[in-house]
Amino acid sequence: MAVDAKRIELWGGVECTVNRVGDAYRDQLRLSGHQGRLDDLDRFAGLGIKGLRYPVLWERTAPAGIPDWTWPDPRLERIRLLGMRPIVGLVHHGSGPRHTHLLDDGFAPGLGAYAGQVAARYPWVEAWTPVNEPLTTARFAALYGHWYPHAADERSFWLALLNQIDATRAAMTAIRSITPTAKLVQTDDLGRTYATPALGAQADHDNLRRWAGWDLLFGRIDPRHPLFERLDVLGFGDRLRAIADDPCPPDIVGVNHYLTSDRFLDHRLDRYPGELHGGNGRLRYADTEALRADSATPAGLGGALREAWARYRTPIAVTEVHNGCTRDEQLRWVAQAWDTAQAVAAEGADIVAVTAWSLLGSHGWDTLLRADGTYESGVYDVAGGTPRETALASLWRALPLDAPRHPVALECGWWERPERLIYADEPLAVRPGPKPRPGRPLLIWGWDGCLVDRVSNACTARGITHVVAGRDLPACSERGDIERLLRTLKPWAVCYVVSDFPTPRTVGGPAHARCDEAHASPLIQACSAIGIPCMGLDAPSRESGLGQASVDVALDHLIDAWPCPHQPIVEQQ
Image 1 (tube, rainbow, N blue to C red):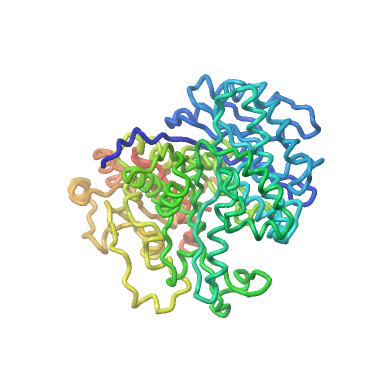
Image 2 (cartoon, rainbow, N blue to C red):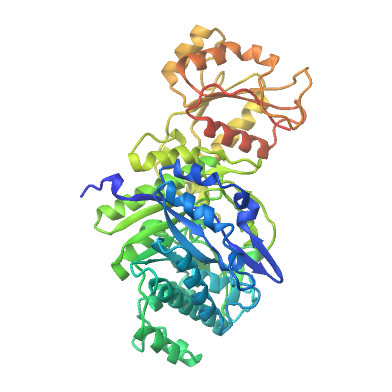
């Protein structure tokens, strides 16, 4: 059965986590600059977004108990005027204001009271996520101890989860007393755990536990549920019965799945670095991405969606699609996520939306939000202070319309290539890889063999099909010959590399054309005539050359330029 691409809506979401570590809160809206940019909402609407996951967070709006609507009022009104439907979130990986936390008896009634205030302020809002990813948040805050209140035991984990579920129930009761038609969009991370036979029982437990948040809301954890006895021993039997007697089933199951969501557990600790070592109190084991181990064949996003549909038979939205990687890999993951959702929908599942997540990128997830960490760009790059569209923006606009995609998005992602395997039973060289999907090439052109090789090696590492003029193709210098070459090869862009410039450079200044481009003028003119993006890379000198980070940034910018016209030299410091 074919599925109309327009049937699945495009949603969006801005990373809005406000998590607490010790006494300090880390606010993603301030880190991205969205706190002070109302016009970001116009940018989002320009992508064709129908639904926007948007925060009116408890910690931000009512830290001392009395709500301050100064920030959310103009933003929710702007969202409505732009024709987007807000999916309002109230807690996002947080623990509430300072007077409460996930293990506090007052957390659930407190969030319920706040939800009623928000609903009274915005009675026209139909979709709500009172608590984002409750199971994941309970793991990070009460099982691993990463976030406040920094507990690290099983009972605290279940208490934190139950408090968040009761908070969701209380919030939706309060919201529906004002807006009876309000819908619950309940999100959580969903992956599958694989393991060596020695750890099969732990994998079975993890694969049951991953459903616990949704199972509770659907009223399924009663004495017949496999988890009931374990939680009853911990003293939660009466709470489980109360939840099962008064459930709050989600109207939409929000599945968040990342390339790291599927896990592999291995008792052979000597194969893995120490930072991957962990355990369950009885057994020690390594915990790594299933994609990195050849003992697992992870089901990925498709498996997660199929399992969620089979379990709940409730409409599903893919509520976060993001990959913190180079631009080409980001594009490939987005395209694959969209195509996977379409394929699962074609099988009969009710997939209602796919969400462009981290519209403005995210800060510090490489530290699990325990420290400042690094910035990962998203659909927009805010590293320079002003949001700049990346190639993801064009791709997200194209997907619902089944329009042409960026050529690099058609190639295999790292998770489909042999180099994904780090922990392999057999040498990588003897293992067959997946059938490659080579696309239109990037043409590399230059006058310095070392620098050209560095760019070529970067493309190889990133799975970008490319050819090098003078090595893979005959060299030519006349404009007519270059045009004939370009029309035959059909590259999606040209990257030319130059070095040893005698003229002064503007340190920290914007990319700009220079007199040295005269050496490349026939190439630039030929690219302009045909409409192929052409960008130059400038190394400060032959000795310093282009570092790997500089090459990767430059390639990202070149990918973002497609299908724009000629771009001048990008200076690398």
